[in-house]
Every structure is written in C-alpha cells, then in structure tokens.
Length: 230
Image 1: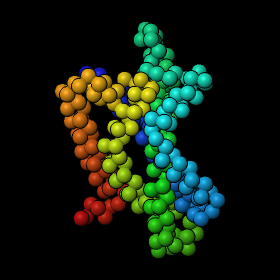
Image 2: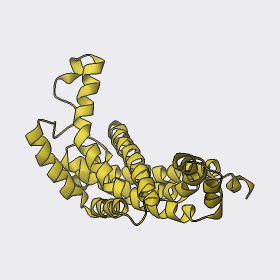
Image 3: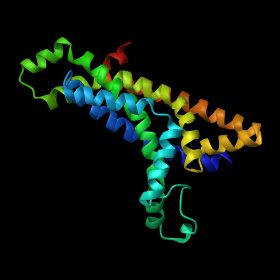
Image 4: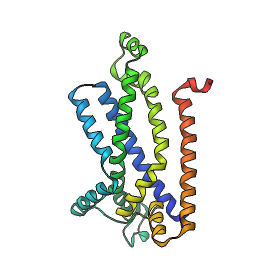
C-alpha cells in the first residue's frame, strides 16, 4: 500500500519544494538587496501572508478557482489515460499536479523568502562584502560569488527540518485534491483505524527526515568549506 503511494508523494513534494526554494531564494535576495524600500516592504507583506495561510484553506480556494478555469481538481490522472502514449499521459499528470503543487509552493515560499532575506541582510553587512564593492564588482557578482553561499546555510537547515512538517501539509493537500499519495494513505488509515499502515507511514517519514538532515550536513560542507576542516 505504502509503496504504491510513496512515489506519488515524493513527486508532489519534490516539485513543490523546488519551486518554493527557487522563488523564495530569488525574491528573498531581491528584498535584501533593496532593504528598507517599497520593494522590500512589499516582499515582506507577501511572504508573511503566504506563510500564514492555512494549507487546507488555500487548497480549497485554489480548488474552486481551478474548477472554474478548466483545470483538473482531483486525482493524479484522467480515467482511461493509461492506454494513451507516454507524452500524453505525462502531460495529463502535469495538469493534475498544477493545483496541489501551486498550493504547496505558496505555503512554503513565504517562509523561505523571509529566512533568505534575513540571512542575506546579515551577510551583506560583513566586511568582505564591503571589500567586494570596493573592488568594483557588480551586484550580480557580489551576490553570486560572495553572499549567496553563506546566506544559504540557515535556509538549508530549515528545509531539512521542514521535511517532517511537510508531511502534515501533504496530508491536507492530498486530501483536498484527492491525490493518491502517502498523505492520502495516512488519512484513509486513520479513518479505518488501520494501525499497521500508520506505523509504516510514520517509519517512512522518520527515515525521510533522517536522510534530509544527512543531505543538509553534506550540503554545508559544499556551501562553506570551513565545515570540512572542523
């Protein structure tokens, strides 16, 4: 049961995390560089609102919007699509993924944007950033070569910690959009009082959190070479 559902959740969470990280990092960097301006204040408001939105409520709102926009609002693929060519089935799955992935992205984008902004503001106040400006480096070079890697360390930690909380959001998203994933299996197992399935699901979540923390530790050594010498 869990093997059938696990990869569906990995695809959904993976896509949502990737988009949330990319958008959060880009907008967080831009807000930090334009600190204490209208751009920064606007980014703060957007990120705080996105972070505070209840997952299930946002999912229901997007579900209503998708039903009026002709987007699929439930399931992973259209019935009878299994006999179609691969690219047709793949495109159908992408259409079904759009709304749940968008929900996931919006919820976590705000948090990543706030953390990236705060971390980058601390880094930009360091002396080596002032030295880089004195050398005549442009904004892109300073952010890419000197500030970004150091500012990413707190974000990597939060992403690893978030994996455990991510599953709670995945349960709500998968339930709202009828996505056949691990979160949906947990919801169904609770209703049936199927304790072996719940135990197996919690074990998978625990293993996922451990692996995420291991990957975070390995990422630290890449982002900050000083970690390798400690």
